[in-house]
Length: 158
Image (spheres, rainbow, N blue to C red):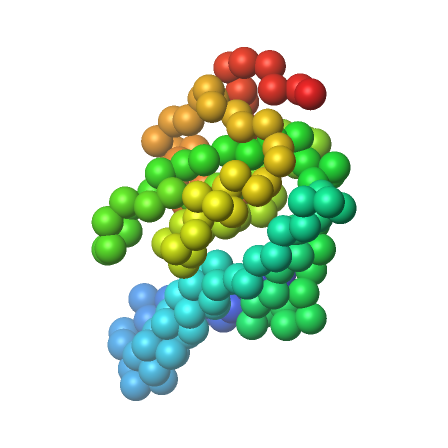
């Protein structure tokens, strides 16, 4: 996926450069109207997940169209969780990010896609980090990339 993203960014860069130098052509418009919706679709598909939480083994298994055979996360590899509020076209919703040992967000559960979001959130037996520094730019980075360093204002070690 990383290689695809790098390739698409180089491709879009060349297309924009061509548009700026020679003006809009049919090929340039076609590229813009096909590639941009494809990128948006991949970004949205990344958040559609089927999640199973096993409280006994303290593991989370998730499936998606991008990972059809599933992936397993062990809660022992994470130090906490952060609940964030996000705003979309359907209104406000909560999102949970799991924080790894480097104090970086690494896994996202988007509350927009789950009716039982509160149940999922309670089943994740990790320390909730309630007080952390969040600037506007960090919020935007979190929203679009899903990866930021969480600087806690309190100690969240177990």
